[in-house]
Length: 109
Length: 120
Image (cartoon, rainbow over all chains, first blue to last red):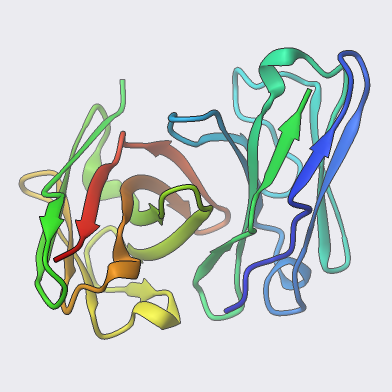
């Protein structure tokens, strides 16, 4: 069970769009529609932002968009705001009924 | 509102054991899978284990099989994580999370976490 690969860091200016990738294998991301994304501010608890690849929970801004192609899932944040600065983690269900998190990406705005 | 409150963390010597607890409220506890996720200081999230609503199915990350045991008490709205033969690299904040499993899979509510420090 190796972790899906995420870029260690991404950055953007307010108002811009950025995309965070999450590259797994055919045993996790590539085999699952159950990819989710979590936002974690320093010292805070993770917060669900996207589930089932592209669904937003109530209360999450429509500036957050999830997608997947093959073994790679992506989180796109449009109209960057300073409060979006945080760590982001993808998570995927796997073919062995376990779960795995990506290594995490630090977003700097 | 959903509340998840972890307890049981602390300073433990290498080789020791610890049982973490998570008390749930604000939802029908017995209707949901529950998970434990940990985060070492300055590191990323790591899924540890999850347990089905009635406790009959349990899954663990391969690297933790044998030393970690997840269990639950639906009458008391509690989920536990027993950790044996603790090692320094088990030092982390341990979160419990309400988990949606079935036609979906994600963690929709998290506790504040309990810190486990393994050191002599």
